[in-house]
Each structure stands twice: as structure tokens, then as C-alpha cells.
Length: 212
Image (cartoon, helix red, strand yellow):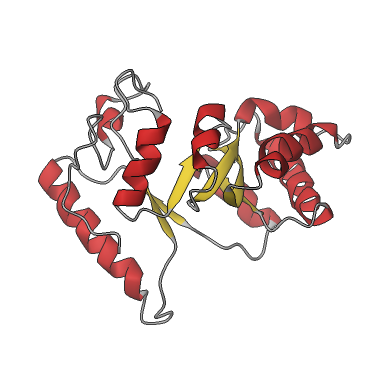
């Protein structure tokens, strides 16, 4: 959503549906997006912003309860699949991540809700999470991969075909996310990070891909 020329949420949902894109990640609980996702049956990964992790990690369950009740329970017409606890949390704030993750795992069970908790890993903290967990389910999120549109086309096309069949050891579909839906002209960071979109802001596809 980091662009000043992006289509409105209702057009984005329609674009997902017309291209058979069945999942969406929201980096924060954007109310306009949540409203148009109701009844769409698009599977949603809803992120908890990093600036809320400290309060959620406290012993009091109020903050975790409020998030789940406000954004998940109150939107039962949305097909939530994951609650993503933070996004690439840096080392300074990493102390809050695991307590917050436990709160959401507990709250999901308490509320008899099927949503799973997940985390988008900062490479700097991988060793910390591996010391603390012996078994992790990993979902690959694709992004910084190519310097030209032609290379990106080849990479995406091969990746989509690969995840349909899996690996020799696990010959089954692999869950993966492609980052991102649109180019984002106001995004911070290197210039290349503004051009990760599968679509241009005018909703025209940048690559010839099939999601079926």
C-alpha cells in the first residue's frame, strides 16, 4: 500500500478474483481493505504491526484480546488464515516477539478460532529463533530476486510451476507467497524495492503468469 497511485481496495479485490489469486497479506489491519474482503473468500494473513508487540507481550492479555476481537472475531465474513506477529522485527525489539507470539497462539485456542500465528523472519534473528524452537513450519516468501523484468518473468514462471509439484522428497504443492502485488513508488529503501509488484498501479500485469 506504499504508493500514491494505487487502485482503491474494492478494485484490488476484484483484480485478485479475476486473476485467481487466492491469498492476500495485509501488513496492518487496514479498515478499508478489511471491509471489501468480507465475503470474498480470499485467504488473509493479517499482520500485527511491530509497534504493538511490546504492549501485547506484557503479562496482561488485554492488548492481544483487543487485537483478536477487533480485527478477527469482528470480521467473521473474512477468511483469515494467519495472524502474522510483526514483520522482520529487528534485534532491539526481538525480545517482545516470542511472548507476543505465545499470546496469540493462546488466544486463538481460547477463542476456538482456526487462525494460526506466524512470523516473517528478519535474517539477523534466524539463529535466535532456531535456538528456541526445534520444529518450525516454513513458508517461503519471494521478493528480491532479479535485476531485470526479463529475469523476473523467468523466475516467477519457473517458481509458480515448481511449487505446484513440490520437491522429490515432498512431491506436493508448496505454500509460497509472492511479494508484492503492486509497485510502490513511496516505499523507503533502495530504488529496486519500489518495483517488486506483479502488477503496475494501473492494474496491468507486468508478467505473463498463471495462478491456476
